[in-house]
Length: 186
DNA sequence: CCCTGATTCGC
DNA sequence: GCGAATCAGG
Image (cartoon, rainbow, N blue to C red; front, side, top):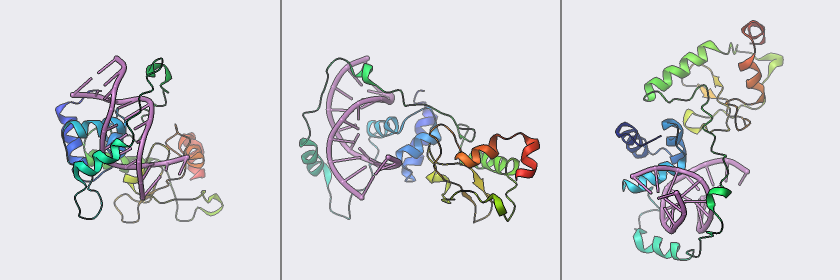
């Protein structure tokens, strides 16, 4: 994936809105958080403000950096040692499309299509809902939507999900059940 | 462990 | 220019 004008614009926008690099990487799709940070630097965008008011500036950072120059393993090849844990993964609910609007629509659709949540899960009480916000979702948090996205009490499950699955163990079952079974599993 | 941004440097 | 590996820290 390359840095097209549009993607750079999105990057600038999200970064200025205070989203973290990993969150931006997720929204853009196809890039790692490192890529985002690297791009931010190349664009010379303002980094995240440091402590209170005092200006850390170059001096402080330079000093801190100086403490760790002797890095450069350089033995063999780094390429060989690279771990391919950079799975794009592309979850079903991955944005990828356009802006927040599209994202929200997608979520709404998903929420309406999937769970029947009921007000009383009853004997079906799910594990532990961390009740996290959209912006707190990561690759390993359950992205199961709970409630009405247009309501204030909407949240995502947020449980631990197995790295590849967009859902936690429990919600993965619900999500991937045949529609016929889902009717009563609610 | 999870996460954050910052930097270096092979590509 | 790009971004993984790494560092430094919460």
